[in-house]
Length: 174
Image (cartoon, rainbow, N blue to C red):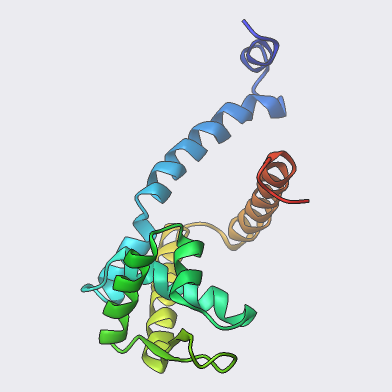
């Protein structure tokens, strides 16, 4: 038996390391729910039941990329790691719904950029509100102090998770 496993199995319940397996099991459960994108699916059901998750992904990619400059279909495809033709099809569907629009680039009129419309902004706001409502429902019977403590600890955990990933990821520059 390896040293780490022996240590975990021999710890007492008051030992902080005794809770590491619980965290691991909870992370596995959360990964399954996140992989199935349950909160996003529930939010779409409430806000725009005729949309698919891919529509929301494209809309969110445009929202995240806009502050850095003009957004092209290529930018969206790269951000979502999908084929440019697939990104183009979803953008076309979203343009047809008046959630996105195409326009000529201000920097190079030969390029076409993708912009979120007012209807798209409203849709994003509605979906965000739906997601917060779901989270609120999950913690509805928690005392306020527990919610505050969980938020603080979860942010700290995710920050540590990101730091470990960035320090060990061979594909990350720097």
